[in-house]
Image: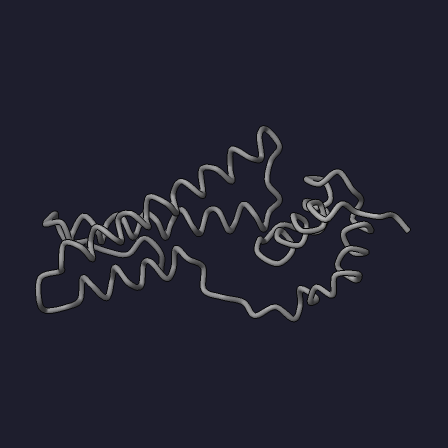
Length: 144
């Protein structure tokens, strides 16, 4: 059985546990085979992906916060708006970075759909932020 450098195993484990990358993508990024990633999972005792607890995407959580702030009867606190704007910018930068990381290779369908959903959510957040900053109120949601 092959031995893996601790840094390689730790990086693959991070991607396996904290990203939506497929095992094949993780293997390709780390210069190993998908079987090697599975061996690392078995040796490291990583939980099976099907056992992971699925969380609400960060952009969706941010949209909920912004919408709740918009719905308050009292004018929004500028610090709260600035916090949401900062998090919005970070989320957008992360989306751009993940796209740049792909290079010219097209994303798989599931990844493309996730990116599209994130972009739509960010557009909705931008509208809510515009309203919170005194712009016109959003007329309708982008998504049904």
